[in-house]
Image (cartoon, rainbow, N blue to C red; front, side):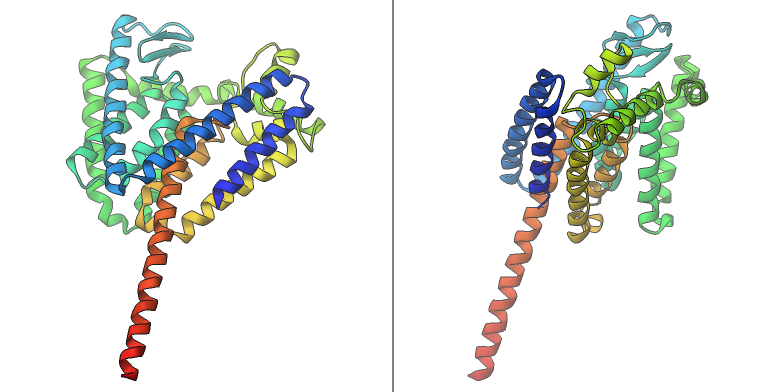
Length: 358
């Protein structure tokens, strides 16, 4: 059901490009949407032909590989800069020096997007931490997410962990909480004492900067997006036109860093209404299929992804489409299983009725 709303949203969003001042930008995002949606259906068909255990094993294996490789690249990057954290927008292997902060980017190009990509892995390990492999994966996720020094991303991961603890009896999760605390404590000890890498000091400095940098300039960008919407309420300024408008009026090509405001400014009330319809339908289907009980990692991933959309521009994103493909396959399988059960119940009822007549 949510796939129809998803296609409707992207259709309406692309349609607003017809009214844009920069049609080349709208055409570019339209081509990207077509490519991403095509890949979505291809990935979905591949996942649909696999069993749930195979898909989840792949998530577990890929998550460990992704985080381990990113961690290795990060330390290679630190060694490359000689552990001198001075500079801005300097990239070395898996590290980005951002206003003198050594932020992990690993296999991704942006530390904030790293946390976004890691959300599926983090939620899976968190909800399936009963095996040694998944405990290792969860520890790696925590370390890599921490090293991104992404304030919004870390806050959302902490929120997911908090609601996961509250989902069941918190006393049942004490062992997990103690294990995570111990793993992080050991990691911090090694980093601070042996590597002379003051992670705690960097985190404290990042939090202090929040009051002076306006969320790395996000508040100013959000204000610009709202102003663009205020002057183009119905269809917005056109699909993927914010960077061009921003460049013309303010001299930079930054995106909004807020998916909801980006959609609102670029496609107006028409686009944001379709997007909210899409998101609401996904949430309703998650509730109806009792995903929180049966596959909690899919539920928590959705919460994490939606919350991070408030800090990132992810109108099209490969990890988001991968998650939707996994979710769509699961929902389809659940519906098919319910139909099969209903058929079996009907057959048993008929047989019972015949037996009673005989």
